[in-house]
Image (cartoon, rainbow, N blue to C red; front, side):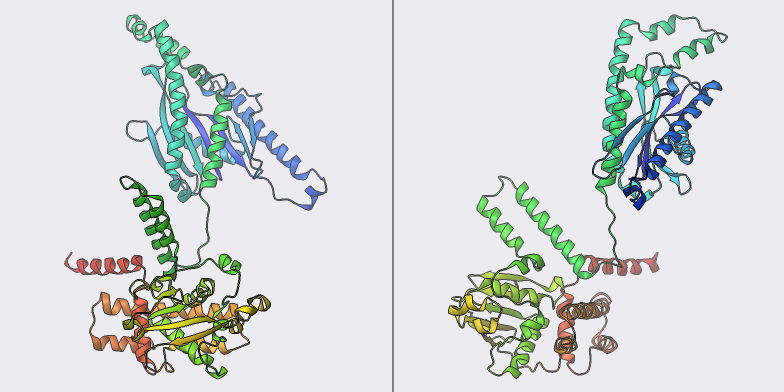
Length: 567
C-alpha cells in the first residue's frame, strides 16, 4: 500500500511533533544491469537510505541546536539506524525512523501531524477523524491520551496518522484501520496506566501539587522538568519502538492486501447483476439454515446444497473435463441428427429446438446418459439471458414448467399427458444406437452412438422468426467463422435484444402506455414485420430475465419524477 504511518505527540513546550514513522519502499523493476551483477540499483537504494538517515540526523541536530527538541519530542537517537523489515513475498521493505527518508514527505507528514493535534479533532479529542486534500494527501487520524503522573492534567496527547494519496482507498479501509489501530492504542494505554498507578502509589502528585506554593516567577521552571518525559519512560517498555515498527509494518502490508483493484469495462451487464443477486440469495438461504433453531440434519443440508448447486451456468473447465461424448458447441448440436433420416432436415429439427428455447417453452431431454444431457443444456443455455434460465439437469421425476424450462429425465420417466399434448414444450428422447461400439468410437461421433427423436405438439411454423434466430443461423451456417467468433456474435445479439427488452419494459410496464403506443415502440425496435409474433413473445419472455436491481432502479426513478412536480 502506498501509504505512511506515523506516531505524533503534542509537546507542552514545542507543540505537535512527529515521533515515529514507518513507510513502505517498493523494490525497483529488474533491469539487465542488475542481472549482470552491476550494483546500480542496490547502491542507489543504499544511498537513498543513507540520505534518509542523514535527513533525519540533520533535522534532529538542527532542532537540537535551536533548542526545539526535548526528550518528549524524540524517539530514536540521531545515530540510531532505524528499523527495517523485508517482505519475502513481494520484496517490499518497511523502514521506520523518526522522520520520513524522503524530503518531499517530510513536510506532508509534518502538516498531517500538526493538523491531527490541533484543528482536525473529533468531539472529545479522542477518536478517529479523516481530513486532507489532493495536494498534501489524505489522512486517517486517531487521537488518544496516555497517562502521565507528571503531566498537566495527568495525561499527554498523542495521535497515529496514516497518510495516503488515494482518498477512496483510505475511506474504504476505515473499519479495518480503526479496528487494528485501537488494539495498538489500547496496548499503549494499558501499559502506561500500570506505570501511572505505580508512580501514584509511591508519590501521589495531586496532593503534592495542592500543597505546593504557586508562584508565577518559578512556574515555567517547575513545568520545564515535567514536559520532557518520553513515551518509553511513560510505558517502561524496553522495546517500544521495535514493537511499533512491527505493528505499523504489518498494518501497511495487511491494508494493502485486503483490497485489490479490478478493471471493469463499462456498466455491468444484466447477466452479471443476476448472477450477483442469485449468489446473494443462496448465501442468505444457507445462513438461514445454519442459524435456524436446532440447525438442520446432514441429509437436509446435503439436499439444500444439491438444489443450490444446480446452477444456471456450468463451469467451462468442469464441462471440458467431463468424460464420454458431449456436445461442444451450438454448431456441433446443429450438425447432429435430431430425429430425421435426411441430412437436409437436420437444420429444421435444430431450428425447432432453438425456437422453443427462445420462446421460453419447456425443453425436456430424456435419456440414460446425464453427461450428454448436461452438455446439451450447457450449449442451449447460452441462447438465453441468465435470468431466464431455470434448470434441473437430471431428475427421476417430472418437474412442472414453472419450476424449470430445462429438464433432464431418466429414460423410465413418463411424460404427463397434458405436457406431451401441449404446444409449450418439446421432448428430445435419447436412445443408445450402438452401445457395443462405445469404446471403439471414443465418444467423438455422437450420431453413431445415440439416436435422437424430437417431438412437439406445436403446429406453428418456425421458419419466419424470431429475427434473433435468423441471424444466429446465418452465423452458424458460415463455415468461415470459428466457434469463438460465433459465440461472440451470439453475445452481441443477446445484448442487442436485451436492450430492446429494457426499452419495452420501461415503456409498457413502468410508464403504463397503451397498446397502440406499444405497437409503435415495437416498430422502432425492429420487432415488427415478418416473425412479429415470435419477436414479441421473445421480448416478453426475456423481460422475466431482467435483474431486480434494474427493475427497482426504474421504479425509484419514476416515483422520484412523479414527486418532483408537486414539490
